[in-house]
Image (cartoon, rainbow, N blue to C red; front, top):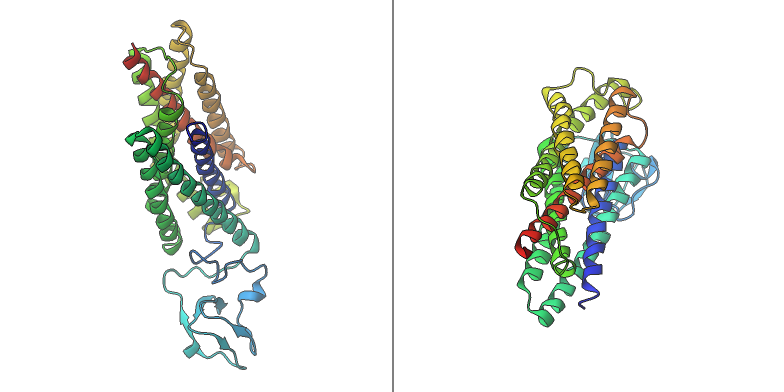
Length: 343
């Protein structure tokens, strides 16, 4: 288990980032409400592929819990029902959690795949818990249990938040919390990985470098939280002007957009300072080069979104690279901090 458990931890980290990627694609395509209910999709375990499946029809069979759209309103079947020639409201209840009643098969399946990725990640976390228990029985390391169970329970919390995101029709505050909690899970898993696989390596400690790393990770967390708020403004613009009119997505943006854009300057300066110190002090942290690359990628995709009307894929790359950047910064900080104890 000593050799296998670090691999399970790595798979868990990758699974969380796959959720970030799937979520980014959902936001990029405007598919957040592709499934109006949770955990099912229009009452189905396997989503519908055509609008006729969820449109009320006479002389048709519907199972309890199936959702239909009639007169631009969602209705839920109260029981197994066979419809007559006219709609009988006694057999149906209006879906009251929100009033979003549209169907787009591409949006539906994009959101459904996002949920499947989350479910698969849930199974990975079950393996993580099982592995942590076996690891503890063998090595009696309580930290392993702590940093395995806390992410597991936070994943359950994330699942509940995902339901709330759908039930509230993409409330901005909940989306922001959803994203931040995901990053906290990444940090906890990286700490777990550091404990089980990296604690015997020697790391060079530099006080200024260590403090800048912590600041850079906090800055990234703030920037990502701001980014989710900017993204919500874009979603509202899409609702007003249509998904095809991307040139209106950042028309008359709120102050949060300008803070988000200007804050990039501080992030670039802090991270290039890390790169400079790593070079002149010969600290030897190769991950710093990846940090600089991700900063460059974040900046380029941000510029493209603003000046080139959101080219396909830039939003997903922008979000995912930000999440990976935070993870690298946090892991680097743990490496450098351990150098102080070793010294």
